[in-house]
Amino acid sequence: MSEPFSLLLPVWAGDRPDFLAAAFRSSVDAQQRRPDEVVIVRDGPVGAELTACLDELVASSPVPVQVLALDRNVIAVRARFADPFNHPTVVMRRELVRRVGGYGDFALMEDYHLWAKMLLAGARVANVAEPLVRYRIGAGAYARRGGLGQLRAELGLQRRFRAMGFTTWPQFARNVLVRGGDPPPPPAGRRPAPPPTNCRCGPGLSPHPFG
Image (cartoon, rainbow, N blue to C red; front, side):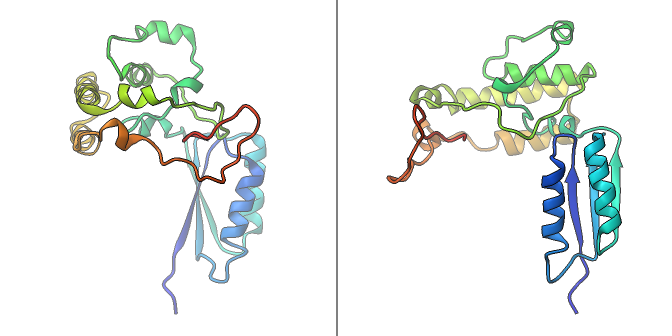
């Protein structure tokens, strides 16, 4: 007999009910070897449609389902280890930005620094599931980012986070080791591979690394 196993399935307010149902059915109903149980982690409050979808999945599942409901979304938890937001897409409340002092003088890391200040001030944050922008990377972007300057900024930011109380000492040590342990490659090494020769783009568009 095979070893018993559980399927962990997270869901949050930005998920689509039809996508959640499809993921559940393909991972449970459609499998020859079904999980022995499903643990759904509800990452913060969800709307009425997702709640109804979860109730239906629990009621109709061929295997036991446990729903672990978290009181708040943990996008904020991830911020202690990596920048959780794509800056060009962020929408912020002006009052809170002003209250925390706005952007500071922190070259290359001023956006991540601002997110940390806002989270410490109690900002409620979330990401949405849909891509919101097409981001074009020019050749100059690789020269401006990375290198020793980027490394110094990263280490400085981690020291600031620790001084602010945004991270704990273990989190600080982990971030310095993982995010600052290796010097970034030179600009040529950070460029994405060129698209295949048969790549076709729509009118007015060109291939770039972030679809």
